[in-house]
Length: 320
Image 1 (cartoon, rainbow, N blue to C red):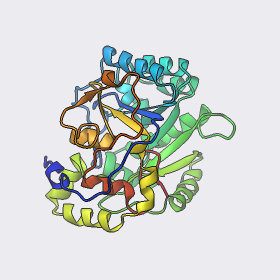
Image 2 (image 1 turned 90 degrees about the vertical axis):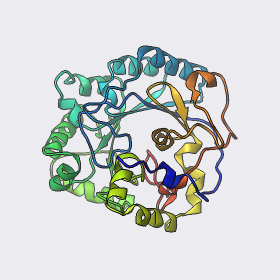
Image 3 (image 1 turned 30 degrees about the vertical axis):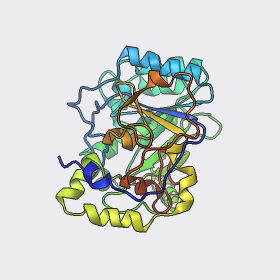
Image 4 (image 1 turned 135 degrees about the vertical axis):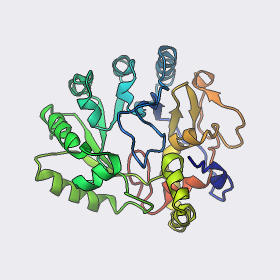
């Protein structure tokens, strides 16, 4: 695999500083039942990295000592495949923290995980579900044969539990990633298309998030192999919109890896860029217990143009 960090290290991206921390995004491990082309964490069925019980306890301690952090955003891999997933969710909910599960949908059909959908509903966990297109051929090309139909089955199941239904309090948001080195289309227009096509299948949801593919890890390596890396970076840079700087996710989010080390965002985590501008060593979550980060500098590199290009991109979709 081609590393893209050396291609991204030199940058003229504007400096950034942190606002108030509101979200703790935790990567529970790289184990996943899928292997997707656009995956920026290189997750897959053969990965063995999983957050352990001691680090789970440290995450909960951080939430307890930072009451302004009201959202716990769980990601992976498939975060549900971590054996401590249910414990972490239940304990966070006891603290009154909103929990987001970034779910690939098909994990809900895996043997041994049949309980998951009901558990998520009982805990009132917000589900952010990956569905990179509403067309079967496109989804299966990107994520594997049969993934689209499995995803549709599980969306029906979540709907039956109340997810996406008006007044249920159970939020179901979908995620779109482009098929290649292009920017996502306007989020609202695409959401309308999703509602129309999925509505014909009897599926409802709350919102669609469009997320720009980052030129790192598996996707970045593919760009290098196809000699499209520099063209894609040119697109991101030429599409830069400074107004997106105010709402990029790194200003209010802290990213935690499976070992408990912290980064300014999930993408910096995958590039192993330490927390804060000029950082030379990794910071552990336990080093930040009781500490404030507001006003601290954010580590940047050229991939940051991916979050500020066009309508902008974050784990919560478009910024503009």
